[in-house]
Length: 503
Image (cartoon, rainbow, N blue to C red):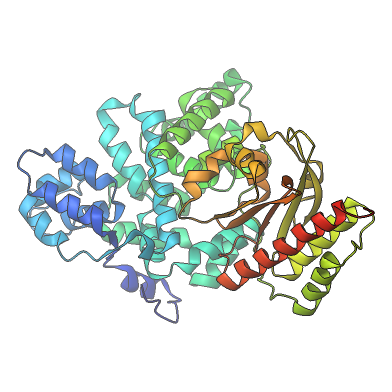
């Protein structure tokens, strides 16, 4: 979608800009919802569940049902009640003008945030809906739609999501400072005013009012929640503060807790923010931190299995990685190929007879050549004689922990295939789902990227080296792909020349 410039700088201007959300919907989902609305065999619950998979449609229906009008009464709290209020024919007529796009055309930041909202709904259902069965619809729809004001923001200005990830999550800059700098107003205040203007479900408005106007209760609860190892002491502290105890037991807190868990886990499960929400959920549910984490991780894994689009990040993937690994890292600026250096390194590789006295010298030259051709992160692994172990020979642009990496090819179908014969694999969002689960978690942790080149190189018919390289997580262009291929050919010829030295 086109990005209007400049961004509004006042609350009034933002409210006017975002008052009528028209978020794009995947064309396939749009068609299936319209077909369901015309199918007399579908119940309201069936239709609502189908709309759950298209958050933009669910938001549109909810807002239309809650528009101030004669006889509208209290705002609808669930999508089923909204559908009942509008009627199926009116709903269908309204949705016919909803903008549609292919999934790939919808801004990635918007789709990523909607996945976070879906994850929040999964956490709310898994943690709270069973305990509060009579309120499951309010919990379900409130948790899904809680971040809807930010959906609308990203639908218009999708670049803001990437900026938030890099500056707040990766660089650790204060969120309030970044919001003021980018938006001119506090984000939570904007969300509250939009939620009130749209007449969203009451629990959503209560959550934002707490975050904006009365964080004191939340801070006090978080302080008590830290002492998770002593539940009796926690209860004594709550008994001594009846106001806090009454607030903590309100069902409306379920959607705030679920979104806190889903949003914080987008960065890391063991980050301080994530642990705060886990402990607070434990205080609410009267569970230990271990029990909360077990349930939350199970909910995340269950939700990840339901996701069809693998170009989005799901926190469940991090559960397979070393615990301190982060998928978000500071973005590196793309570096143009260093042509003269690249040619010099390739000349050394192609020298006859071999210019190298040992394998370390050869692989160091190979690493430098790969960097010179535009690769920012490089890992060179050498295979032992039986192909039972892969050890690091060289690395560039990676964490120092990469130097100690040791892989068993038998644990990875992709590695076994690459060791059979020389081959190249180019990973991209289009095939990531097919291959990602077949790569070792420790390797994926070094390359938190959806754009990765993997190549195996042989000497005298036997694969001896595996190369992993990318351009800092950015898409790999065709010229860069060709340069990588030519460099790999030079390295392979160097291996053959090195093996034949002295003969």
